[in-house]
Image (cartoon, rainbow, N blue to C red; front, side):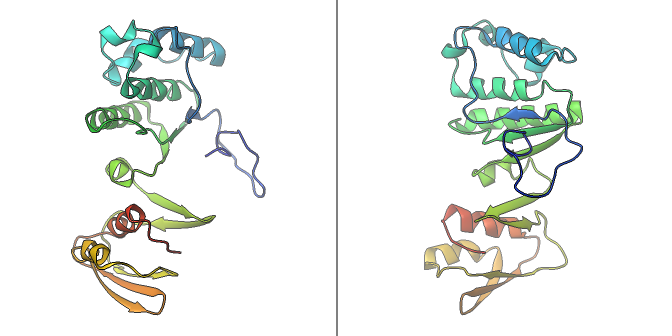
Length: 220
């Protein structure tokens, strides 16, 4: 994501066709003494992009009028994340990068933010790339998924499909409690350090990966 955002250079290859992506990156803050509206106006002046109406953008994010006049330092983490998302969509580019959009946000706020992201993506016709460790929270937002493990990329199908057999290599031995979590999803057989999986009807490899990731199971 840092390469796509233009913050780091690629060691090999090149990226073409991406212009001014919208960014939600950890560590990029706001002017705490200013209001959300004032912050977004400052961002407009810096980027010289006045194509989006700030009030309309905040409406899509369910950003209540009473919160728009508060100082940013007085907002909850949920509303700060909404503001981050609003700022990320204020770009003429067609790509939005959201880095951990639900960090430190409670479950109720996550549901509201997810609804807003869907509305904004549909309204703007922009492509979103979301990086997150909260797999269950993004499952219903994404159309495709890629896992990055030790520099290796593995694309994982989200839906059940006709090719229902998978092989995971280099996997560590799992406790019985974890195997029980896999039982409703797939049938499995061990062969040394390999795990042969056959998905059950209407189940997906994404569900398997959630179990592995949430239980810190190493695989390649």
